[in-house]
Length: 540
Image 1 (cartoon, rainbow, N blue to C red):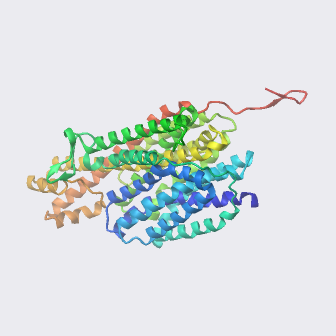
Image 2: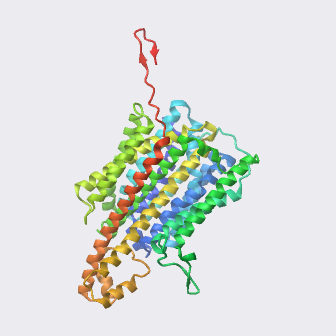
């Protein structure tokens, strides 16, 4: 038992970090009401929680090399606990954004790379493989438990208690770190500040551009910001496209700078030569796409269940449970299959199941989301994600030597969190943008009087907010419309929400299909099987 104490300590921190996002997703409607904010603002907070981690994860990994992995883990855990306490006490969305999206995110960038590196420091051989497997299982368990824990606590107590509990757990983690060995010597290196700024700015520009696409439009400007009454849309192109383009240029400059630092015998933030390792490149790409789909599902389904159907957080968690439990179950199945099948075969099977389940989910969308095909679709989507989760960590870590585990741990953190940020930003923006266009089209083709249509268009010209469908009629009456017009608007809005959910699921199908192209570099070597000759000697 003593042997696995280190895994228990590190796993506790891992559990908290994974739990955090899923808890907030199932608590969206309650937090929106409690803090008097909007779903769009919550989407921004959720996106920036993962984006902060993605933007500074490489720096966190490098600081672990400079300070020592255990010290970085302790400092990160303390920062994370401060962020959790700030979130628990947040009186408004601005404070929640600072505590959760920024402070907790900055704490996590020190903790997550250190977890992988400290497992490597404290275990060897089969124990090390088991340690990594346990951490992976803990992550899966947190994904499964998050919606139920968050749903129960939010429904029967208060969502803030989840973050209070995180403070207590992280305090226990910090007090237990004396049992963790840090064998890797600290490195006396100078961290390149321009590299940090280029990578962070590049990622922020790309993801923020996608996040704002629901307001600004992708190419053709919709509602551009104004300065002195003049809309900002250079050359008639939406700011979304410009932000993504600028982010791509900054990331290109970041890669060039890393190569230049290596050429001048200086320490880069990340050795870009690692990306020449095909299996690592492929593993990280598939990992990012996996988290994009997971985050998209965990954002759009709870939003619909709570804001359209009016379910509470616990009911939402129960609806998501088939995905959560199958993710854990098939993580174990994938680990067992790895004794017979190659990693690529398992990953490919998982990807095809994901494509099929996304199509089933798309075809099963109805007003209540309680039909059997939808349940099967959620279960098999979780099964597919579980198969992927069982392989990708080992694919990435086994692609490099032991001294590079911290750096690859940082890259895995970037892949996971940029995938999560893109999933919430991209799928969320597709969901909200499709709602706006569908609602506008529904109003235009309705039998509502022309003056009422004009009034609705004027009220929603800045976009359509996601609100509970049951409140639309009263909002319409408050805006001066008749009761019958309000009823018709409610019907149009409900159908628009359903249409936007279908559009978001179609986007998931497209991402799942595209991810198939990324898995070609996953190792296709079948596990070695030893047979025995009649004399008892092993034969090839």
